[in-house]
Length: 209
Image (cartoon, rainbow, N blue to C red; front, top):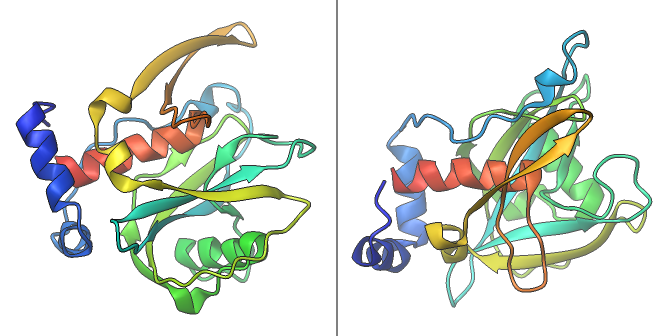
């Protein structure tokens, strides 16, 4: 991957729906940048399967990614920015089925508005989930209905923001006696970090490698 200014400009200019579709049609396999470190805290526990939707929204000004802001009272990841999604249920036939079902439950986005393009590398969270990110192309208009218990807000960020390596941070913190490394991508007043930023880094690698 190159972070040169000319290369970045080319990528941003090419970041179209056709480009996105071609990336998945190519069947490319890219080594993930981040895989998560949840296994370090859950060594004796079985990780639970889950899936999230990475919703790429068609907009006249360019593709965007849709995020949710979790409510402050939730037990896991309270107040954090995330992708819509959740744990896999027994009746879910695939990670895509989980991601689409959970997305509808959380923000009211109908499955008919989402075209699944493919999946990204799995990510293990410190809360004990083995998460499959499912990338979907979302067709506006969006008439979202947020689950007030789980979701405080939904918002969009231009895809090109995440394609700029200058917006990628790698930080550390101490957690339960261990040093954790995590990615962050602050956007305006919003702090996108942790598992969400890790999955975005893998999306970046997939698109730009």
